[in-house]
Length: 598
Picture 1 (spheres, rainbow, N blue to C red):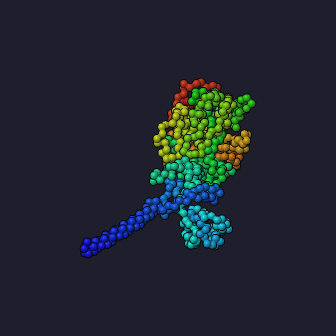
Picture 2: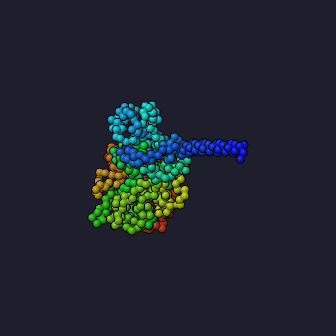
Picture 3: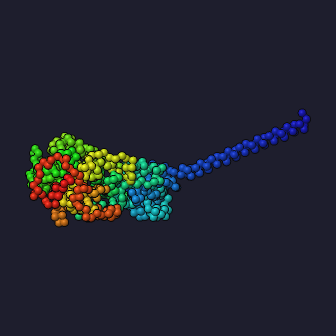
């Protein structure tokens, strides 16, 4: 090969190496930039999509009650509220969530423990010595204070102490405080519902897909405030241990108000006593006293063992085996059905129940829903107490409200059925909660329902419930006074007083119940502690305030013995068992016994 040829080959080989080296450098640079791009892209996704969340599983202690639990905290620069709002029927905010900052520390990063403890303790009102001891505990994570106010957060931040960090958290807030404590309930440290609506609908309230719409309850904040105020006054005035108040819309089955005293502030539920957290309206079961005579009357009238002209022997106490039934205010004569109810005769009610019989009485009360927990959207529901071996003596005492215990909501629902045409309503705490439900089961005839409305009006017009009468609103109702049971023994000086009402009686729309636990009579009640003197006046004041608020026009000059509106012809009714002597009857009651349309 010539010299020139060898030179050409050398030059070609050198050029090839240079090209290959350049190509390798380009691939390396490209790979470097690709890795950089991928790293930057992942960081952008982490910030924008994942939200730069740092997950911490922490064991925390509730300062209110000392309880501990594991909390998974997510630190994010742009946190999103997870739990939905709860509102009343008019959109008033009952429960909501706010974003707050919680302060924690890594004591290992704090250079001067003593200085930090003093400055942080002074800023947040925390015991500095206790905080210093925690700093020296050797832990790398320490909660200092949960849910700081914006002012507290700024003050701590201004301290400039390395090792202190803020974690955004969601805090549940209840603007009305204790006003809806038993109905709305409360949440725990992990923001999970622990009671009331918060617990019953925890999944619904935690679902962000549904939280764009507030969760509306049937309760009315205005009526709740009225009921709470009036019942609280009664508890204070008569030194009672507690009370319950309920308002129900009969037509919709919606509860407009439900108060249980004592109550608590759900913003600080951990500080509440067990007694305050106890829902007397739904969870408590009680012997309801003479309000149960409403069921006895309806039962006898519906089965046909009695009619409005029937009368029963109340000339002397009734003896059943070793048990004797007395009347609180005995008449010592035969009493007609309207009298038995209006004057609340235990003897008359007992005799009526005996005629119906034990088996049919139990069937009737079961049909009214009084032998199983009431169907309501709350986890706190009490189970009725009744005799397993239902004997004749049980029929007698249950006839006037002793020997069987139910919740106040059982009573409200049962009375609603008796006055509203005879069908058992579905109760609900949700606005429009019954829109998809069918009409309730029929428990009494329309005729029996009409008779019950008239009898309940008679109680207010001439009987034990006169203190519940509100001019123009034609209130009807029944008093109840039951001795409380302690250790299996009735306490004569400890009573449960109640009054349950419906209005307007011409076309019942609302049921109102007030029950006061262990009131003490005073000069204003002539030292009596009964349903007529304690609870009936509270119902009076509630209806007096509720009527105008709800635009219910008062009615005046309506004849009390308007037979065409309230009564039907009972000419085919069974004959009167034994007519009382007309002269022995109070003049005000004679018209009820001699109206032709009975």
